[in-house]
Image (cartoon, rainbow, N blue to C red; front, side):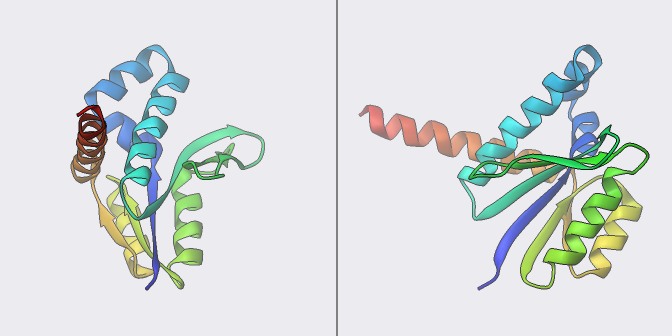
Length: 144
């Protein structure tokens, strides 16, 4: 059975979710951090390995995290997160079931050509909410 990877277009999700969009207006790093925290729950309560990609943070592409946590990638300055997602999708779709979470229709078309599945912001939010319910149920059972 193929492993499952979820690639998330970070800013696409931030700007689709009102709570994160509002936070982004005050503090971009805080909004990014909250999205990563939410995605950690999805990774912990599903069989997805999760990576989130944000637009440029510096002169060259970089990454953070990994080691059991959500992998966070930043495109190089002048490069879009979409191009990083497309490169990752092309690479991993041969050996994994890849799902890309984005609201960008051109990006959806491109990654679907690689054989990837796509979901939108609303569907990803459902996954985040389900992971939160699973966590609450787990703690509730432990408290009994």
